[in-house]
Image: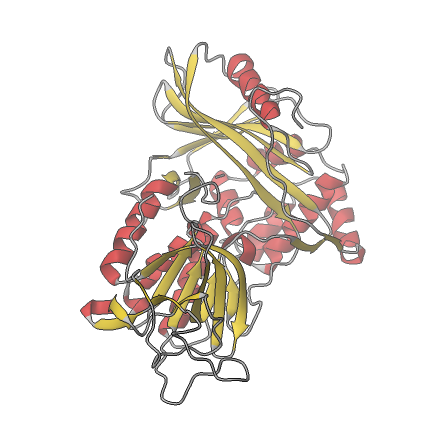
Length: 481
């Protein structure tokens, strides 16, 4: 459910006539770690770096497409990472260690401003001794789901903790490691990524609007997809959350509410409250929907007021911060390789679990797989984030919900009621065996799910052009839609 910048080697120079680059456009800044100004190299070794504006009078081009002249010395980056969200930063983190030894790595992220994502919250479950434990804001052993009637399903899954990590702390840690390891950082809004003769190139613009290009042997692109592929079902997990401080003790610090179905249910889809207590008077409170269309901000605000006042009965409170998000829930296919040297990771690479919207743990697995491939000298094709059978089961659930064959609140309440929470969380993480998956499937409405599973192979996938939806309007504008 849902910064510190450390630029390295970012010195602008004009190249002398003796220096040339293959395939450049005159006047276009081309960032190719390898020649020019000093590059703070890996493991303390000095290499060379260029951040250069190539002007026609200082950058000779041979006729026939800008091929490099004889004797031209050009060394591109080994790896270019596009985007500094969870996926891009996670891959950079792995390449700061032994997996990145000897590799020249550059991370490209949007300049400060509206195109850089706001701080967000990432939640996941794992064992008590995780890699990021010193950064987590809070963690919980006891987890709760509330039925529409208010009946509580509470469990303490053995060996698992539900953890809350803020993106700002995560990014600061990774940026520090990048600086120590000599990984370069470039601020630019990337507009395109494409193969070139000897690798791939990311092109975009810097904060001043000047064109920039960054070239590497491999490019790992973590930008959200501009459009989703053909799918049988496309829903969205969309939410808005308040960080609140109440005037009196309200929350149970030891218990996290994953799903509270005491919210009014939409005509199509499901809604629930989500509460992560940070103390008796402080918590992150979210209103979440799984449905085909998003609300406007005023709609989320009304839902949050209703939930905090009518359901939680918090009394007076102060909203100290907000966050919101829109996450795809779909059986669309997400290609992880989109060129000879271009790969997608994160949401664009299929890291989001369709049935829940969780992605952080899968993103870590995917980043680790890419790092292992690079360390072994192999093509860094991101591994599948989820098992095929998990995706099939999710596709059946999504279509059953979309066709109205099951009610969302009843479906999830029944799962948590009939399946031990530890097993269900392992299933959602992709760690269960086939026999356990079968046992979980038997706890769902058998006939509606069986009917849906039998028809699914015959349902045609439809292309859904256009970008993912965004939340619009002002929080206090009831007319916005």
